[in-house]
Length: 353
Ligand code: B12
Image 1 (tube, rainbow, N blue to C red):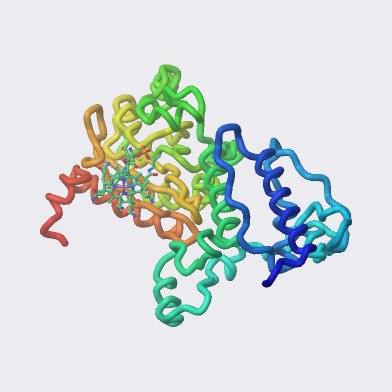
Image 2 (spheres, rainbow, N blue to C red):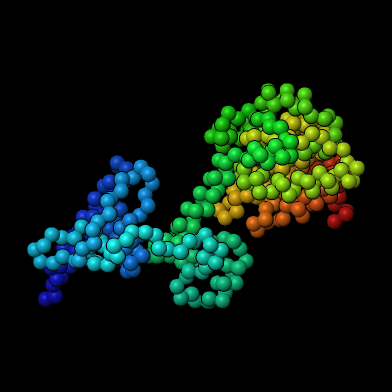
C-alpha cells in the first residue's frame, strides 16, 4: 500500500498551519476561512510573493523567516512555505515585471489559445481587458496588480485637486458649489449642480454679463483632466472664438462642479452659449479625459437633452485637446447661428446632415 513519506506529511501540516495562522490574523471577525492553497508554489517568484506580500499598513506583517532546508523525521516542522520547499533565496522582494508598462498592459496571457490570431485581432479592437488568462479560478497576479494600479490612478484623479498654479496662469478665479467636501460631492450630485451663495455673489461682481460665449472650467470627476488638458485646449478655444469676432465672458473655475451647474451660472452671467470644460469620470486605464459640455442659453429647467458634448479629450487614447478645441469653436458657432443646442439643434440641422 502506498504511503505518504513522513517529511511530506510534516510539510503539508506546516503549510496548512501557516495558512490558518495568517487567515486568523488577517481575516475580519465573522468572515469565513479561505480554502487552503491547492498546489505548492512553482517558482521562486511565487514563493517570494506568497511569503512576503506587501500588506496594507493596518495588517500585521510576519517578520522575515531565516532560510532553512526542508526538515524531516523528528526535527521541528518547517514554519514557512519557503522553508518547506527549500527554495527561499534569502531575499524578499517583488520580482514581477511592472504590469503598467505598455507592452505588458496589452500582453495576451491566455495559455495555448484555440485561435491565437483571432484573439490578437479581437484584443486590438478595444482597450478592454481581453485575453488576460487566469490562474485556476483566479486572475493572474499581473492582471490583479494592473487592475489595482489603474484603480489607484482613478482614485487619485477623483480625489485630487486641480493645480492652483495652472489656474493662476490663466488668471481664473475660483468659486464653489453647495458641496462641502469631496465626499459630499460624490454622494450628492444635486449639490454640485448649484452655486454656493458666495459663488453667486462673486459671479455677479466679477463676470462680464451678456457675452456671446461664457467659458467655465470645472474639476468634475477628474482633476487630472484639467491638469493635463487645460493648457492646450483653453487657448485654442479662446483664440478661435475671438478670431471669429465672438465676445467672450469672464472665464472662471468651479470646484466640485457637475454639468447641471451650467443653468445656475447662466442665470447670473446671461450668455448666449455656455461651454463647461469638466473632468469626466475616470476609467480603469484613462483617468484624465475632459469633456466640453455646451448649451444655448442654459437656464433653470434645462436638461441634458438641451446640451451637447465633446467627450474623451485626452492625449492618452482620446481626441487631442488641440483638435478638440477647434471642434468646440465650430460647435459654438453653430449654436450661435441656429440659436439652439441639444435636441433642438439636431431638429433644426437635420437637413444639413
Ligand atoms: C455617467 C454617464 C452617464 C450616466 C449619467 C448619470 C449621472 N447622473 O451621472 C447615464 C448612465 C445616465 C448616462 C446616460 C446617457 N449617456 Co452617458 N455617459 C456617462 C459617462 C460614463 C461619464 C460622464 C461624466 O463623467 N460626466 C462628467 C460629470 C462631472 O458629469 P455629471 O454632472 O456628474 O453627470 C452628468 C453628465 O454625465 C451627463 N451626461 C451623461 N451622459 C450624457 C450624454 C449627453 C449627450 C449629455 C448632453 C449629457 C450626458 O448627465 C449627468 C447628469 O447631468 C460618459 C463617458 C465619458 N467619457 O464622458 C458617457 C457619455 C457622456 N454618455 C453618452 C451618451 C450617448 C448617453 C445617452 C444619450 C445614452 C442613451 N442613448 O440613452 C444618455 C443620455 C443621458 C442624459 N443625461 O440625457 C455619450 C455621449 C456621446 C456624445 N458625444 O454625445 C458618452 C460620452 C459615452 C460614449 N462614449 O458614448 N450617461
